[in-house]
Image 1 (cartoon, rainbow, N blue to C red):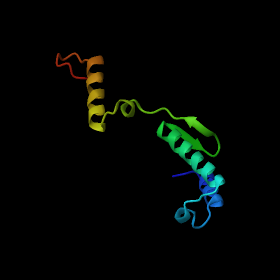
Image 2 (cartoon, one colour):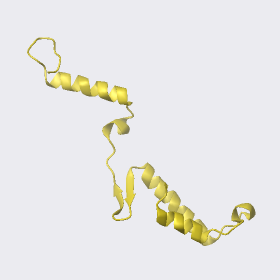
Image 3 (tube, rainbow, N blue to C red):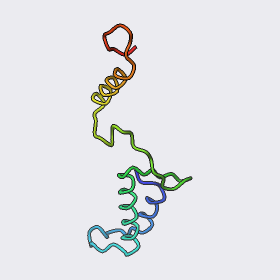
Image 4 (cartoon, rainbow, N blue to C red):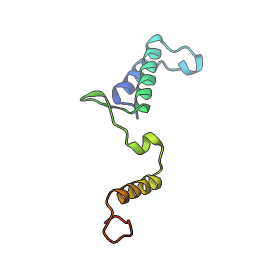
Length: 94
């Protein structure tokens, strides 16, 4: 969802019928470009808050490499199994 300040700017610069006449105002186009920039930042992992503005939000490793939940969990199980073998000789994690 768009932040309220961007929604408010869109509605403040909207002229009824501009979508029909295809003649939005220059102010509306500037706000639309801000909205596009906002969406691009969000897609790249940035987070916006009223208090802090834009901040980089660290993306979990599984999203960066495109793993599904099941494959991510299986990968973690295998990693832990390799790092913490038990003493029973089965190689399973304790």
